[in-house]
Structure formats: C-alpha cells, structure tokens
Amino acid sequence: AVLEEAPPSHSARKLLNNNQSRDSPLPVGGPLLLEVSVEVCRKVGGIYTVLRTKVPSTMRNWEHRYALIGVYDPKTADFEFEKLKPSKLSEKALVQLREKYGINVRYGRWLVKGYPRVFLIDVDSMRHKVDEWRHDLMPNWGNPNDLEVNDALIFGYQAALLIKAIAETQPRRQFIAHFHEWNSAVGLIVARKWNLRVATVFTTHATLIGRYLCAGHIDMYRNLLSFDGEKEAASRGIYHRHWIEREAAHRAHVFSTVSDITAMEAQQLLGQKVDVVLPNGLAIQTVDALHEFQQKHQEAKEKLHKFVRGHFYGHFDFDLDKTLYLFTAGRREFTNKGVDLFLEALARLNAMLKSDNSDITIVAFIIMPGKVSTYNVETLQGQSVMRSLQHTSEAITNEIGQRMLETLARGEMPDPKTFLSDTNIVELKHRLLYIQRRSTLPPICTHNVVNDADDEILCALRRLQLFNTKNDRVKVVYHPEFVSATSPVLPFEYPEFVRACHLGVFPSYYEPWGYTPAECAVMGVPSITSNLAGFGLFMEKLKDDPSKHGIYIADRVSKTWEQTAAQISHIMYRFTQLTRRERIELRNRTERLSPLLDWTALSKHYFAARSLALERFASAKLQPSGSYENLTDLDDRF
Image (tube, rainbow, N blue to C red; front, side, top):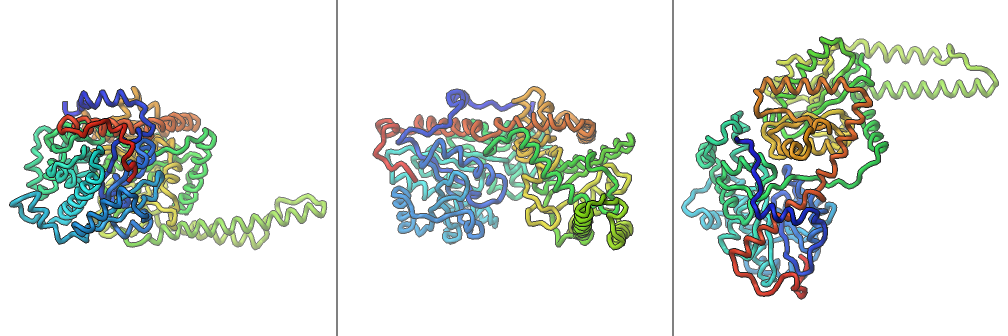
C-alpha cells in the first residue's frame, strides 16, 4: 500500500494533457518566472544538475522572462557567472534593494547552455540581520546554532525582498516564483506571509526526515505510516529545518517533488499531498548514429584497458576481449546507494563464475569519494610500469620497422629471426623480469585511505575476500575520488568513463530520483536500479519490461536484503553470458530511451506545475483587469 502511485491533482492532470508538447515561447506580455535555489551557479549537490540541464528547455519556453536567484559564492562565481549591466526592469529593483535595505545583489548571466539571467545574493553582507529575521519568522524560538538554518533565513528574506522589489516595478504583471529545497524555502514562506503578488511553487527533491531515517539504517518504507515527521525532526535536532520544509509545502500554491515514491514520503512526513510530480531530465544535445555511438564506446574502453593492464601487472593473465567493466558511482552513502548490495552481489557472482570455470573476467569499479591522503605507491607504480612497457615496445617496433625498410630497399627478404637485436632482447627480458618479480596482489583501492580500518567499502571487500587474486573472476578497483581528466591514474571525464563500461549498478535504498542510471541510459550503458529509486519507478511506468531496454530493476520492496543480493548477482551473471552481438543490440536499445529522458519531453510537467500555481493564485486573489497576453507595453525581460 505504501508504494501505490501518488496521482497528480485533477487540475494538474488537465494542464498536463493540454501541454503535452509545450516547447514554444509564451505570448508577449506573459508572466515572469523566477527560479530560486542555493545551487544556482554553485554546485553543492544534484539540484545543480537539475537546474543547469533544464535551462535550455526553460529558455525556449520563457525566453527573457526567466531568471534565477541564487547565493553569491566567490569560489564558484569566478567561472560560473558573468557580471552584466542590469536591464531596465532589474535595475529599478536592485537600486531599491541597495538604497532601502543595503542588500547587495550581483546581476549577470550563468555561463551554461541557454545563458540565463541570474541574481546572486550576497548572504554574508546581511548576516547581522539573522536574529531579527528569525524572530520575525519563528517568534519565541531560540537560536538553533545551526549555520545552515541561519544561512537559509538570511538568503530567504533577501530573496523575498528581491522578488517584492521586482514585482513592484511591474504592478500589472503576473509573477511565478519556483523554490527548490528547504534551504531556499524561507523566501516562499516570507512571500506568502507578506502577501506578495506572486504565484509560488515549492519542490522538495528529498525530505529531510527521509534522508536522516535512511542514513540511520532504518527500514523507512516498510514503516513509513508509523513515522511522525515532527517527532522525528525534534529527536534528531533538525526541527528548524523540518519546520521550514513543512511550512513551505503547506503554504505553496503548488507543492511538488521529483518522483512518486518521494511524493508518498512527503505526504506522510510533511503532512501535505503533492500536486505535481516533476521527473528529472537531462539535456541531450545530439543522438549519435549507431556506428558513431559504438565507436565512442570502443575508444573509451581501450583507454580503460590501458589502466587495467597497468593496475594488474604481474597478475594480468586474463583476456581483455572477455573482460566486462561494471561500476557504481555517487555520493558516499554506503547503504542508501546500495553499495552494500553491489559488493555482496559481486562476491556471489565471483563464486558463480569460478564454479563454472568461466573464462569471463569482471573488473568492478567503485567510484565514491572518501577521506584520502594520496594515491598509493602500488597504483602509481602500476601505471608507471605500463608507460615504461609502452615506451619500450614502441621504440623497438620503430627499430624493427627501420631494419625491415632498409632490408627491403636492398632488394632482400627480411628474416624474421633477425627482427629483434640482442640489445632489444636484453631490454625486453629486463622488463619481463621486473613484472614477474611482483610479489603483491593488485591493490583493491587506488588511494591511501584515512582510517582505512573504518572505511565501510574496504571493510566489506575484506569481509567478502575480494582481494584480486589470480583465481578471482571478479576483480575490484575502489577509487575513493570522482574521476577527473587530470588524474594520473584514471584520466577520464565522467561521461567518457561511463561509456567505457558495460553495466552500471545502482540498487539504491533511498534515491528520490537517481541521475546515475539515467546518465547511463543516454550513453547506451545498461544499468541496474531499484524499485525504491524514482528513476526505476519512472521506467516501470514507461515500459512493460524495462530489462529488454537495458534497465534492470532490483526488487527492494517485496524481497529481503539477502533475496535482493541474490537477484542482483543473477542479473549480473546473465549479463556476463550475453554474446558481444547481444550486448551491442542491448546498448542500442538502451540508448534509444534517450528522448524519454530529455528535458524537451519532461518540461511539460514543470509547465503544468507553474500553470496550476497561476490558476490557484488567480482564484485566491483579485487580479488586475485585462488579460496579461495583451500587456505588450510592459518591460518584457529581466
């Protein structure tokens, strides 16, 4: 019963049906849209990806009537933000804020595709107002000594004052303000408290209580109906944060979240039914032709082969043509992200393949940031050995080619026995003896981990005895940093690394959406997700059998942890039995899911939410006379 779908409201359904392919500009004189988040021009978490990738689609709809409000952070603004002279509409508001309140707001453009206008608020400049604003919003409440709450109060009040100033410059105009997450939601609460002339949308991407419950290894979903959000927040010392989130959900004209499962969670823990579900999308620029798409995979895979040859030197006795690359990646949440299940399933897969005397090798990557000092010596040495071997091989190859050319030029047939000179043979034997003298196993981790005895991933690998021995058919590489093109070990941009792999594994327990399997899909990489992840449920609604399209959904609802581990290990085992042609066909079917995940298709949900907010705002408040479609004399840009 807990996992029944939370349908959108009747009004939202009607708006969705009326805007199935809304991807054209609004009429001149239409409403202005402001989107508010602390992650504008400032990467903190996943909301940055949502906002950044959604910009081109939003700009197509709203054009110059769209702007974002965020926090000015000098560490990121230098390369995310371009300061510009304000437009006529914006300048009036900014002058008013500066002269009347002393609030400093920087105006410019976000340096992402779509190039939207942004207002970045200097939170530190008004930190002296935090006690006054806390008392205004939460009278008789003490100071929570919570920096994030204080920052949310300061940013929220300044955002509300900015929206107020902008709205006052256009008294006949309709405005929509869309707030993301609790840390921007004070602006919404204050806007409603002041009765500002603005329609509001609030999106929670994951409830605070949900995150805390699942981080505490509590089986939240099976016990969801027994939790009281107020009590849970108080017991965990986050009542102020929870109050802001709950108040915004109740006060917004439209309350939304990113998936059906988070909608159910929000209804129970925040006491408010979700009006519209807003699935997360991606900005898919081009669709490669099939041969180009496969070529990118081959090129990236060859680059990963080079790493594997070096990492496993001295133990490199497996065929790369019969090697499959699996991976998981994301924030460091061992159980929430299902890393515990992934590692358990790998150990079971290892046993299956050894029992079969299989010649298939799996190299499984765990890309998850942790506390590290440096790369360990063994990892760096492996890559150094490989570079040395490559240099020696290329030099000898060039010598052989030169000798063959000279022999042929003399009109003689080259003798294969003389291809290698004595010097070449000595040099090759020297390299070979160095490799054969390796006495240690290939490292399971690429870095020196701080307090490695307490690292959950390393502890699990040791318990499961995944040590990269020659007998193991499953090899593991734990890389406790995100991949980077400047890395001396894994020099990949993340999309390139994903393309190099054959299967992504993300059997999350708590995952309101899940960008990692979605990113795999648009690059044609099959993946394992779960029916407790928003993405997994989304795909189940779209496809009768997602596995035929390379989306395998692990059951974390009706199965026990042990049963799910067994299910995942069998999914991976069946994947290893596919032929190369079958894997190529599956990759092609997976990549064809891309249009379903593009913002061009998914922006209709945002349009429905904002249209519903305007509709509810109009019914609750008398509007100026006349239709906004005909207000062509107004300033039409931020």
